[in-house]
Length: 393
Ligand SMILES: *Cc1c(COP(=O)(O)O)cnc(C)c1O
Image (cartoon, rainbow, N blue to C red; front, side, top):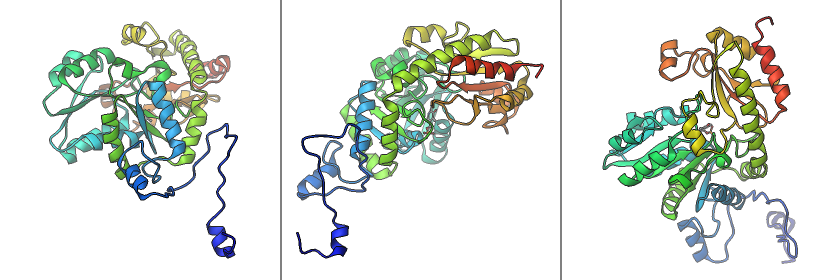
């Protein structure tokens, strides 16, 4: 059209589709919705996750690349990305649960997840039975006809217990119960729970998948199309979809996931071994150490053990505070999985209002410090930790 006035021309910009070449990097589809020639294609896109793109709350091409990439890494058939890890987890909970339903979950859960299960119990008529992450007999005894899923975490926070995925999934399969596994701490480089029988794998992609502490995001990967379709339908209405720019940053991070995980694993191995020999440290919790309660299981199940571990400082709460204050390379911050080493002392931060007795019940002691190693040079990291542990300082 050549007779348009400037007001209309600037609203309806020219469309450029590359032909004969294509971008190397995934474009950011920064659009709220999509244009159609055919209303039937529009209607079909609203009905199924693999139809045409319709609206940003349902799906987006940049986000779809991230979903397909992570589904491929986890060995699933499809994925649904979310604005945060909790967004992904809550989408699944709300898509699958109704009043009167029952959930079996492991005791030691990520704080946000545990809190949501408590809310569902207190306000939405859901009941939850907690079992150990490595006790298939307890899971078998807990399943009821109204049990909708078993919820596990591959490696738990902050004591890094490893779930017996093959044993727990076998028990769930006998009872016809799907298994959801939060694989955030392991990443698909360290574990692919679908290979052990999980039906849904969730991640906080805020952590290792994106890997640079610059976005929050989440994703669920599905072992079959039926569950994917059910959760996607609910996701379209719930409104926890990610922004395409966050998806793009997640993709950019994902391209170096195997390289980063190799360094995270190696740095954790070196640091855990050195902390274990230090007189100021009463215990080190990392599944790669023979002293860890999950070591035998972890060695059978995992090719490596991830970049998160905890130490118990012999000096308790005060030693924890002093240690945190004297670190220079490692940084005091929530979260994990980025290139920087981040440390957290639960007793003076996330759990500061919790008594020593209640801490102990949660398996944490006053001197516990969680360390999520980054990809710095291990000698620079150890020099920093060693000076912070030095009693003469
Ligand atoms: C961070 C985290 C979550 C929540 O993810 P957000 O992106 O913070 O919403 C869930 N599970 C685990 C294991 C986590 O570490």
